[in-house]
Length: 414
Image 1 (cartoon, helix red, strand yellow):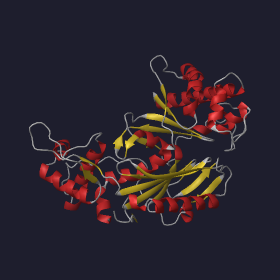
Image 2 (cartoon, rainbow, N blue to C red):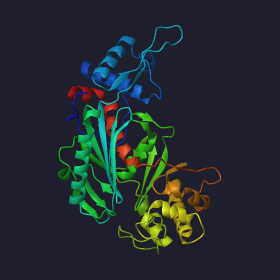
Image 3 (cartoon, rainbow, N blue to C red):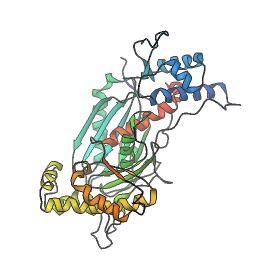
Image 4 (tube, helix red, strand yellow):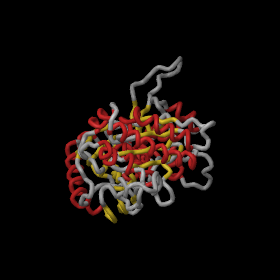
């Protein structure tokens, strides 16, 4: 395999996977543009399929002729977007050559700065993790120059060690637990203690580097089973919980981020107007009841206690269980507002909430039954998400979804 290279491809697209354009209705569109649209259609269909798909199946699904699809597939194969699998005999027809997302060619990097760790995950078009590194730390009230400098070194080492596992790095997405803008600035990350930080100056040389809210990317890590392939459930409200708490409403696989990209800050919604002061400056925020530090303090445990210690303590009656039950009631109060406003019936809990769900569920669902207006007719499902830093996966998937949605742009830039 040739040495990996850094892409100078097209600029970052807005957060979330983009649907492929349909090939029909292209009157007046140039030949190159029509080809790019058709490449998008074929690639999107191939990636969305849960099983390898044949050229004939792509032709039938797209409405394009078999000869056109064959030419487009050849282009995607040559560009490292798709790969061929061994031929299979289907029925009495000619052997079909199944197609699947390419492996070890184009790759994307998901990065994350969390109050609890620094992380990096390299993922290829098939969804395979080529390399990853997660370094636990305490990054509350940290210096952004120091933290991002360390992240740059971690990234350089990871890419160097894995250079023979892919051919091209097409982009990087960095997850931040706070408000970010589309110009690449961290406006405010209360639990990191950061304000108005321009990230790119500390992470030079990374292609198509873009920022996004950690909860938005983590939600995408649950909404997609692989790059370009939707998961079983594509509409839900996701809650990410560590020291802080973030939320994201996902509709048909796309995070609803709001006009400025700042939607979903459920951790700073009010659950008690007489409650304690939050890091954001307000009082009574959800984070002060269900955030990690708040739960540990209420449980009477040291602030650096690992999650399994708190989980074990909460299994028995005592301060730890009381702290988790209090967190469940606060979370139920906040979620009832979300359900009343958004009419969502599927809630995915991430981060530390996954381990606490058996204890949380009772008070959480009790608050929902009491506070949700549509309770007699609405059954709100509360389910655990996947662990393992999903924002890293979601960040990489977001970049690769851009390739799937517009492979022509990448092939032209290669």
